[in-house]
Length: 68
Image 1 (tube, rainbow, N blue to C red):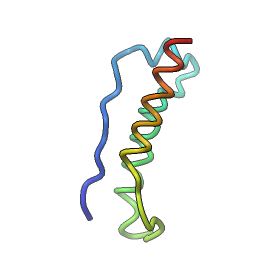
Image 2: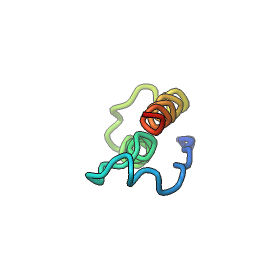
Image 3: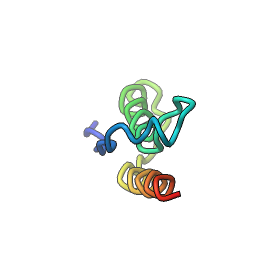
Image 4: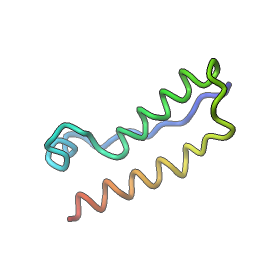
């Protein structure tokens, strides 16, 4: 199975945007992608993983949250 690409989150701004400790959309997306990569070989539950569009959408959400 090929490795799923990840994007890096942008510093500590996450703590200000998500005070309950939920994290940024990008961080949560990367966690989900990591879990898919880890567990899908045994579960065989995913037909296709569209990591790049998910990362792009999460980045846009974080940017919109940062802009208010």
